[in-house]
Image (tube, rainbow, N blue to C red):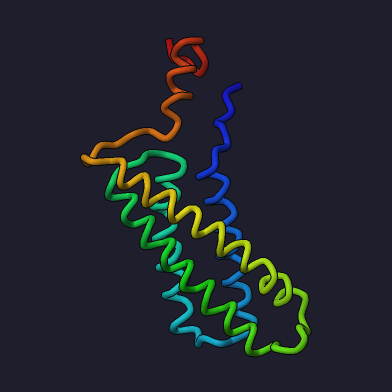
Length: 152
């Protein structure tokens, strides 16, 4: 059975997606944004994360990388806003466990998002032309050599 490798980009994508889900839960529970602002923000973030998924799991090209960078910038802005908001609401003590978890993990998630953002910017600088490179290029080569997955 062929299992795809878990590289740094895939791991960072999974962790930033988990952090975005935690932020959405916190925004719903804090009620800092009204629903007609929050729902389009969630939809926009899901659409932008789709391109980051394509960059991390499917193929790398300049167009996908540009939209993935915008997605990460939106995530960093949302992370900063929510962290500051939780800090000012609970400046002396944190009452709820979810808020405490998000507040203390937000610094770690912020660093991971910045690492993924730097990685995407470096990948975009390396790609000089608009070419599509499969993410698992080495895995495809390995599969074709050993006849795994019907490739011979």
